[in-house]
Each structure stands twice: as structure tokens, then as C-alpha cells.
Figure 1 (cartoon, rainbow, N blue to C red):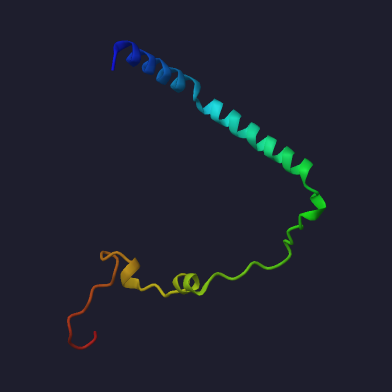
Figure 2 (figure 1 turned 60 degrees about the horizontal axis):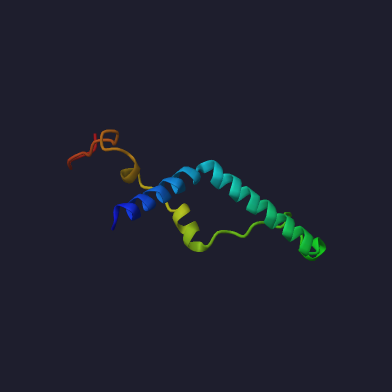
Length: 94
């Protein structure tokens, strides 16, 4: 690659880094969102979109989630060894 080509690529890269900032991204993103919203509201009949019924109860989670959420937790799994009661080594109870 010649020096002129390398310098040209370096300048292009520098210009790209300088112009592509967070503020540029947010400004561009918000203007695209506003444009899409405006286009949606002007092109579609808002009465044709069904209203979301929020009074209906939400569906229960699938069984695989309930099984994990309601599984009993054993003391030995969630209690550190230092806190657990010491085990007795056989013999009659005191």
C-alpha cells in the first residue's frame, strides 16, 4: 500500500471516529423512531388496531418454571458449613 493510500485510509478512519459519537447515534435513533411513529399514525387507521385488554389475568408460567421456583431448598445446600449444626458421631442421643 502506498503512503498516499495509507494516509487516505487513515483520514477516512479518523473522520469516521470523530463523527460517530454517542450523541450522533442517539439523535439519529430518535429521529428514526419519530419518523416511524409519524408514518405509522398517518398510514394506518388507529381504530383497526385492537386495544390491549389489561383486565385479563396473565397466564401462569409453564410447568418447568413452577417446578424450579417451588422446589424445596435443603438446609445443607444454602447454609454454610460453619453455621450448620455439627454432626454427632453415632451413640445415644444426649
